[in-house]
Length: 530
Image (tube, rainbow, N blue to C red; front, side, top):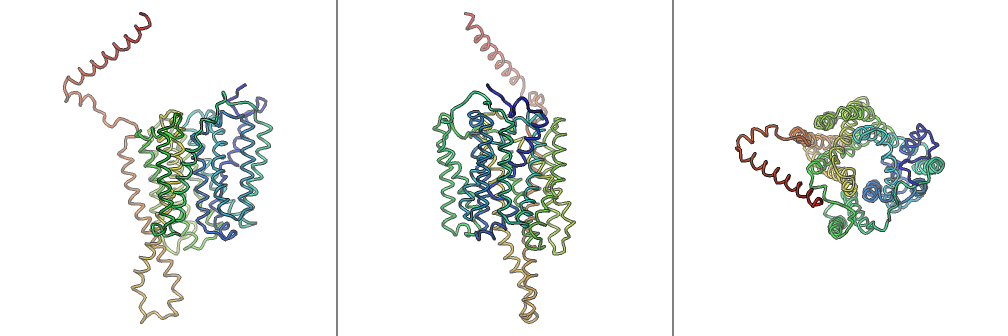
């Protein structure tokens, strides 16, 4: 009656693994938009870039909203029925995104895509984790595969958009979803995972409050610069709405018998420190906007050449995965692995700091992108592992949605918006400094018009360099934190010395406590006997 696998008994193991890999290749890159072809969508629809940035954030928010209830959905429906239906719906949503010109429809579709996508990926996690024999090794292989796949799909999204149009890639994604739905219908079994559980215990109002909290926040991060931040009533109202939604969400969890979210794990030291390190990781990942300004705005790369830069991260990602598998198999402490990841990110920032020149060569991208790939891969694996280490399954599922949104949306979105604001302010400051040399006696109007582009590019370079300088300084502080943090080990190695200073009273109190505990156990055991 029950089958904890995915496929029918007659399907060979190699074929099962192949289908799981194909599902990952199709489902994991799915999203409401693809960052590589954002510029093509903007020019094709005539809408603001900020709408599609909002849709990009919406996919992550949908995934986070699904996480607390994903296990209940998994146990409620038969595997084949659920996966096939979700693939068909994902295909239809991708087709809608490829044919509509309304950004609001794309944003709503992206949110639902993220929700459905997480239901399928959880089905793939469990057999893969059991196959690889451990959470650490699974993270090492899985994140390497997914992050590399994301860079490859982003490249092909640009290539297809350039050869045909931006809509074509969505149509291809929809077609692949339909093909995988047919394959799953043939090979998957038609049984339940475990005993059926009801869905009426799901608090849909909490899900709505969760979504509204982070969708309002995504609006602030996306439209902040365009609306001039706190000078806009829309940004202020959206910020207030996000805060009120989160407050109502937190209050509601206290009144529910089966809360949608649990804040209990956030009292744990590893979760708090892990969230801080994920926030610091967002600082480095937020440099993608500064890198794009440099490569496209200053160096003049087209979209396809710019997408190729992300492919240069794949060797670093693969190396990070190999190191992670070795690290977890040998059960080494995480400290130096995390330290190496942040060091690689600082190395990337240092190279970019000294590379802010107009004469930057394409071949010089290989080293910084390799370091960025290694840093991203190692930190995604190690910090995520450390954050969720030694948590009970129920507590982890009830809070992992918040942690996922924190890692992928809040941290990256906050620093992307912050860097965008600083870049604009520093650029104005640089233009003001360059104005000292614009003397009307030695610079004619003809010379000014010819050199205006050079002046603007140098102002951009100066602003980018200043931002990378601040990132390097902050990164050194993060390295110091990693070196001094215990990562679950004993902070002090001399308890006997402490006992010697405190005297025998410590030992006496401990013996009394142990004797009291033993008496309680004997009393509990004696009760049934009497």
